[in-house]
Length: 449
Image 1 (cartoon, rainbow, N blue to C red):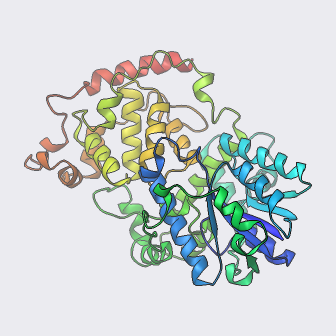
Image 2: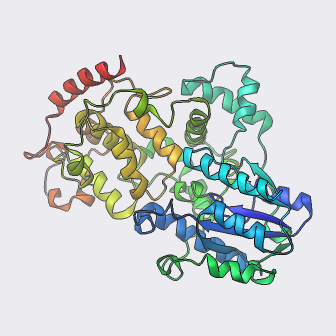
């Protein structure tokens, strides 16, 4: 019997792990471990935690619809897995899971491997969350050094996928032979030792909507106009698939294949390439998860952080975007850049505070992608925005939402202002945009020298 552990792969088809299990031909026990470390500080109540748990509820229901069982437990992953290896019969001969490369994930998985090694059990970790096989891409490019600029990376990425794209697998959970903890010797006792806290148990979290429906709608109605409308954030021209993609509730390969042949799909494909580029950076940039240690950020402060997170900066588009984020967990990508650059540059706040805040508030939170975006805005890392490039939130608002529809929606107290006035800083704005820009350039020039 093999043990399959779900993590950021909350779906029942097109999984590298399922292909592996099917080829092995053995029954498998399927487990999702809710990790207390990842749910600390009431994250189960935050938008990011709620999104993951709703997709977990949907996944368990999908198992049940096929007459299968997904066992969901709560505890330290290494300890839970060690308990399973020691206490169930028939014994597990192998652990199969999908790899993750964040600092915490690497430590967690090393502890799992140590526990398995003590029991004489093999661990197989498969990469499933990128479109391109990134080490293979690096080898194909014939480069000793990694790509540090997006555009040449994108060209080689596109070329590589044209030759070596791994198609979505037709295999699903239906094709596997599975067992459950309730039916194996020692399993019921283990379930009793690792129960879900009442706050995490259904029906606290309704099942997430099917992302496949949203994908079909996006391909049919929005792909041709995506390039034109994606930055016009007052309109919903984006795919809204990121909460499902980043939990693995829909396969990135299925998304990629769905838009092949679509007219004007290039802009959307470039967004998928950015996703791989950030993951690529996390693999090949040794400082990716530690830039705050490489540079002296002591000149920055948290003086204005509370005003920023509470949508009280007096800059209308920033406050509108933070209001939407706080209330819904959503924020269009253009507004993520505007708000992040405003925090890091105009307010001279360490990027780590904004990064940590988005960790809780973004429904589509992903550690690597979130950090990549914040590093870009803070002028750190591969292909980051130059320190002297500072988005003017007023200009951005005027350009991408001339009528101020977005601000009127999220800041109704300003709805009566004219199309011209609605973009401008309010009298109580916490900084002057021109002066704070100049100060930021001086500050970051010193930090990065």
